[in-house]
Amino acid sequence: MPDVTQAEIGRRLYHVHRGKTVERAMKLMQQGIGAEWKSFSEADVSILTHLLQCTWNTIDQGIWDKIPFANTKAGDVRQILSYGEGVMPGRNPAPDAVAEIRKILLAVK
Image 1: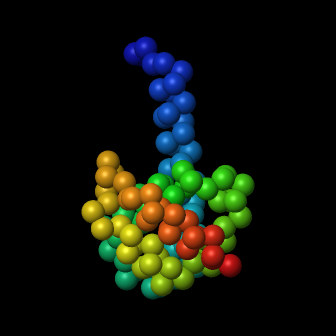
Image 2: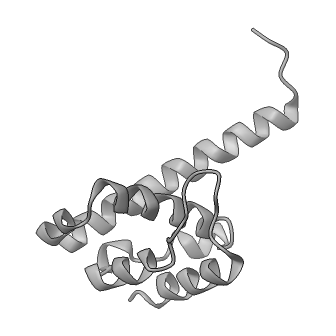
């Protein structure tokens, strides 16, 4: 096994945890939205995942865990996706876009 620093191990664990947390949120969103979820393309879902990962970085874990993702509406997802132009892994949304996505998520009741 190659030499890996503790910092690198920490970074990898952080990314795995973030990915799994966002994956759970996405599954709840999909369940809540139901059949309308199929109106989102694979590219939309990929961008949504990346946008949620970037936003997860800005929300306290305790608060994130209390967001009722199953109550998210398709309109909420479309609004979030509206901040995704030009976004892809390696190209993150602007901080003001993340702040707006954060507001959308925290408004879900």
